Image (tube, rainbow, N blue to C red; front, side, top):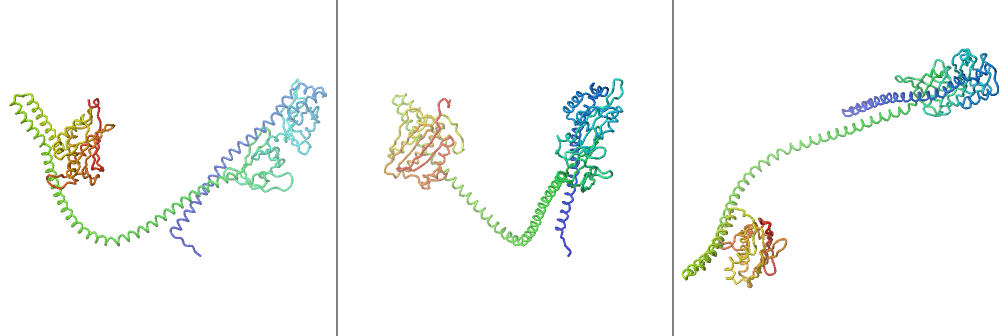
Length: 581
């Protein structure tokens, strides 16, 4: 059966092969790097163990050299041993933790010893070296009943410089490696014959190296399995030597010529391989995760491409219908554009007509506001003429002054109306609200009297200073009072109330007994009016203008219905004389 792969399947296979190759490279590099670090650590551990062993053995060498010059040792070789000599040697052996301390003459016979001299059994070569004048060292056979003996022999020189004999110090190597037995990693030291003398693994003691092969062999029994191979410049032992030895280890050696031994260490490489496998697995996992994301993104892009192709096909099928619909809409849009232009021209004509009507109403208002001052001027002028005919010039001067005041008042009214028409702003100054209200009541006195309106108003005892303009405030209150009088034309009871409330803000409340307000929320909108349309009636601009004036000086104006009629409240900002100055 032959498997067939499409382009996507072939890409996945190539990607997996690449991940496998990359993981293998990472694993190999991690193993080599880990082996280098393991070798450095093993060399350090071996050097530390070697220094420890050399240091422990060299103190016995120093003891042999020092005791060889002792006078009592020379006396033993010249005159023979006495009981005190053995006591000296035993004391030295006990203090140095030596196996035995012996004095040997030139014939090799033990003249004095700390023990029974058994430590000298089979020890001949190193003694002969000492008798020749050099420092000797050597091992004792482990089957002689003295354990693993290590000897130092120092020559004893006579007064004439000749060699009288040798001082031999022996120690048991079992006591030397007791302090560090069990330390990791496994370390062992072999003598010149290749036999393990010292190790931190007791099972390796007395194992021997084969002459032309690597590894170790036990003194008796079956030879364990051992496979040796090299990984770069590293020597690897694969062995099955027991539970306390690694199955696969890095083998390192170090020569110790000072004590005539070779130090060797076995570094377990299983952690290195596990770490390398973990790193390779992490790289493989990252690559697979990235590949999975890339595959999902590719599949999504492929799906979107297919969907886009389907969408484009649908768009092409609908384009023709939309083009036909657009042609029809263009015709309809042209017709609607012509209709909108006609509607705009009609709206412009209506706005122009409304403007003309508003101008006519304002003209009527101007004539109404100036009529009373003009009548007053005429009256004061006639009175002045009569006072002059009667020889009362002082009274005539008073009438002329009143005429001047009326002229100034008409000038202010015209200035205010001109400001309204041109949207001018009048500087806000300190105004006495009581004087403004008195002027307004004076202007509306004639109409109130003709209508029989009762006025409820208490004149303030002191000036009430507010921020604003005298003419503008007067215009506001004239508009409010005029509207109130218009509302009470058909009322049975005609009462106008004015109240000034002083506080954080100055409140002026104007209430009437008219028909009220149909829509209080629209009463300040331009061109809103409840009066009949006509030349003598309103066009809905009075309250809108009053609203703009009050807000321009930082105040507020509100309208509401009451049980008797309507009430307008004007809120103004107070001003102190120091602030005005």
